[in-house]
Image (cartoon, rainbow, N blue to C red; front, top):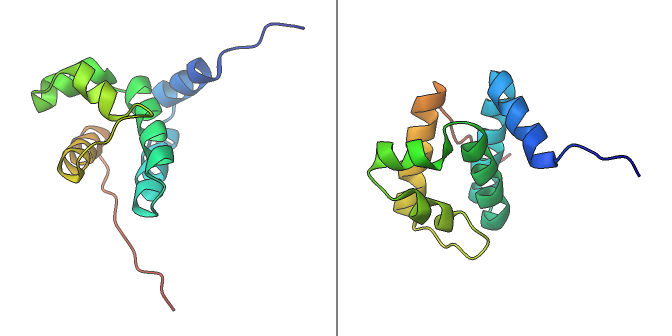
Length: 106
C-alpha cells in the first residue's frame, strides 16, 4: 500500500495557504459548539489553532500556559465558557474576521 500524507499535515498546510479555509474552519468549530457538539468543536478548534498561530503564540497572547490551553482542547478537556469565548475572540481578531450568531427560526 502506498504511503499517504498525514491528514493533519494536509489540513495544516491548507490553513496556512487559504484564508477562506481558515475562516470556514473557525466558523465550523464555533458553530459545532453553539449547536451543542462541544467535543467536535474542540477538536476542530484544536486543528485550527495548530494550523495557524499555534498554542505557544496563543498562550503568550492570552498570558496562559500553552500546555493548559492544549489540555482544554483535548478529548478529556473541559474548558469554561469564559475561556472559550476569550480564545475565540482572540482568534477572530488574529484572523481579521467577526463571527455572528443568526436566528434562523421561521
